[in-house]
Image (tube, rainbow, N blue to C red; front, side):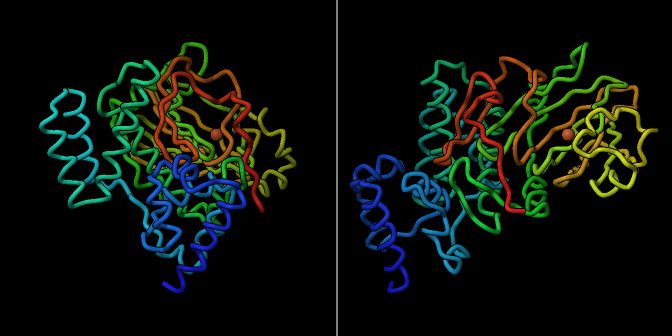
Length: 357
Ligand SMILES: [Fe+2]
């Protein structure tokens, strides 16, 4: 308790500095006034999502609120495989207006399983967001997909070696931490298929999810279709092959310089014969990491359709190759899963992420 008291004083001090009452802070964080009072007294624990919300409301970093020794014990309400099945059953009951079944699941979670209770609340709020915005509620697998990617955001934020959780601030995440988080993500095939557009002219990206650190999108590639060598600056990219075969070239900045290829202007390098880079063929289920400052090229060299799922940690491409009118999920700075009618790719609010190295 003595160790907590210093940190709880920090919350009180920062709240006062921000000119907020306990009631106002409670409204910003989305908890009751009593919860704020309990946190400041040190009589209730907080989990990662609440800490993120507190950072947003108090304009501070997670480190300010959770010193290193304490951050080891922050609880992340992870959406596990077991809970996904229950949340799926719950959503089906809610959408079918089967109040008896949904109430039974909710009451079980309230009494026995706070982690599950958290994700039922997230599902409720997401469904409410659809209704509030007058958007038709999609099938349950779409809701589960949105919640799964919201959970991925929580995981990524929690995995950072240096936690800075304000929107638009610098983020630092190791490539291995990133791929470890993405590796666990499984999205339903029917959900992914909704974002595939085998455009006649060129490839199109279907944006499934976007927030201030993460963009998740699908690309469908006709046979022979390709994207020239390019890189994503300081962004990390993970590519899951969903269907077909992906031929993939990688070229480090160092190897580009060795070949007198201008790394920053590498976007014009279409033909693989012009650069010396190893290619590798990946099949459905494979996951590929494209590290920071690494150029790559993708081509569908097969006679069948290729579908790839991309996880971009950092700034996404700002061009006209995004499918219009798709259902895009997001996760706001308060950790709440949201839905958007149109992709926010071109939104001026999206500020490129800066890294310390
Ligand atoms: Fe790329």
